Image 1 (cartoon, helix red, strand yellow):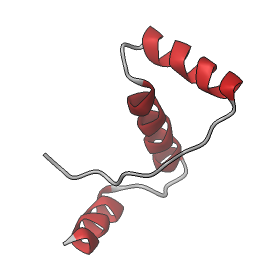
Image 2 (cartoon, helix red, strand yellow):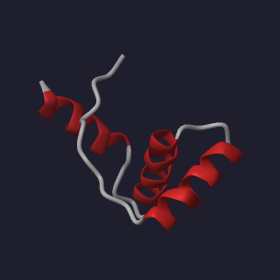
Image 3 (cartoon, one colour):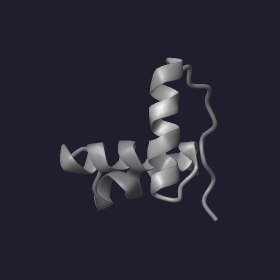
Length: 61
């Protein structure tokens, strides 16, 4: 299993509530939903591709 970076994120309570509802609708945790949203946004904008993931993995070593 890959290691994940841990960091604190402060959110507006209304934003968190909306994320929580959306996550529940898709059977994900809030953390999983945030990760999914960010991953999709990066891919849509061409900022996350196979090359980017490979480089990120190599930097962790």
